[in-house]
Amino acid sequence: GDALIGQVDSVIFDEAHYINDIERGVVWEEAIILLPKQVNMVLLSATLPNYRQFAEWIGSVKQREVFTLSTDRRPTPLRHFLFFHDKAFLLMDAKGRFQAGAYNEAFKHVREKGNPQAARKPPPSSAAQRGRGGTRQALRESSHQSSKGVFQTAEAKLKTEIHRLQGLITKLEKDNELPVVVFCFSRRKCETYAQAMRRLDVVLSHNDRSKIHLFVKADLHFYVFDASAFQDCLMALSPADRDLPQIRFVCGLIHRGVGIHHGGLLPIIKEMVEILFQRGLVRVLFATETLAIGLNMPARSVVFSALKKHDGQRSRMLLASEYTQVLAQRDR
Image 1: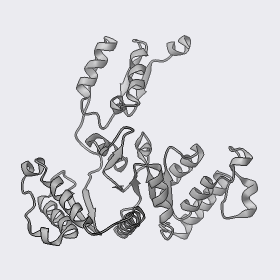
Image 2: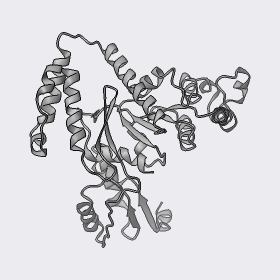
Image 3: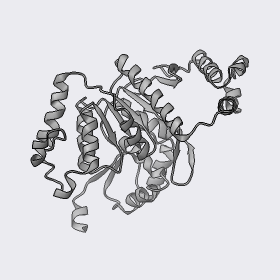
Image 4: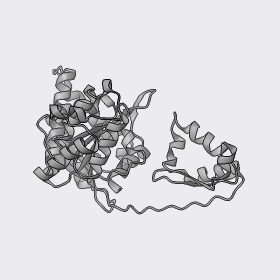
């Protein structure tokens, strides 16, 4: 081990913001501390807010000079929309300018859908009012009013979510905004949403469909719809694993241009989905945050199915850094 380390000149740490992660941060910290002093380090991150403080810590630990480089420029301009009840509101344009008019319209739309009579109340007109909880209070009120007298089961709520998601994907396809990554914050939601999109077929052409078929059969030696091809199965897997429901499920999706990606999938299945997405053959991808970890999978659009996640301890709102990191898929 020492002889091998002696041959290492530099180590590149990608996604260095994971030093702040509750579960993984300690591993990053140990890797930096235990790396021999003479080995150079290059740390990369698009979402490390306290990078100067981090650099100072590394300098004190390694007793070396540390250089920092930063930029506020995005390679690809981003536009931020709120999609609510089949209507899209542009909240921030490609130049990073907040659209107050669209915000007020969205605020009114939320209240109208939740409680039409409350729509007459004016929205918070300033950042100070919004900062004092005006928006949260309004959303809380509209949510409370909309639930009065209505017992919405979990199944009914899921159907509503799926219907709205289908509407959004249809709109994105019509506006030529595919491929899209739909980020879900649980594996179950990924699979549930994908399975519910039975009628969704976003393959561009017969030629693309043929490419998918050939890739699955020739590149991975497996073709789910051709019984005679089961002899050309996934040679990397044991015979017992070659007909797993997971493989059948994912292959059934990708033939319609739909994919899923999460930590519970077999590595070979994840790789298949990644390659097809990079080639533009999977155009709607339901994924967890694992997709945002250093994978070069460019998307024209990114959708958040929720703005809350469970971090292993509690359910909480997304952090600004988490939101930005996921959006990095749009930059690639």
